[in-house]
Image (cartoon, rainbow, N blue to C red):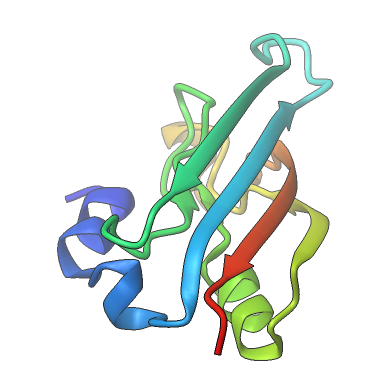
Length: 121
C-alpha cells in the first residue's frame, strides 16, 4: 500500500482532528533542476473541515521509490501555534529509482505556502 493511501485510510476529518480549523489552503510548487525532471508544476488545495487531515503529497518523479512530501508536521505545528501562514521547502527523501535504493536520494523539491483559517473562539 502506498504512503498516501495508508495515511488517507487512517486519517480523521479535519473537524475532528482540529476542531478550531475552518480551512487549510496549500499552494504547492514542484521544482527540480535534474536532467530528467518533469517541468515545474503548481497545485492548489483547499481543505475543508469535512476532508481528511492528510497533508502528504506523493513525489511527482515517476521512478521515485518510497518518497513524497510530508507536510503533516508543518500543518500540525502551525495549528498548535495558531499560525495563520507559513512558507517553506520540502525535499523528497525517497530513492531516485529501484536501482539506486540506499545509494541516491530523489530530492525533488516542493516549495509550499500554507494558510490556515481558524474558527472564532
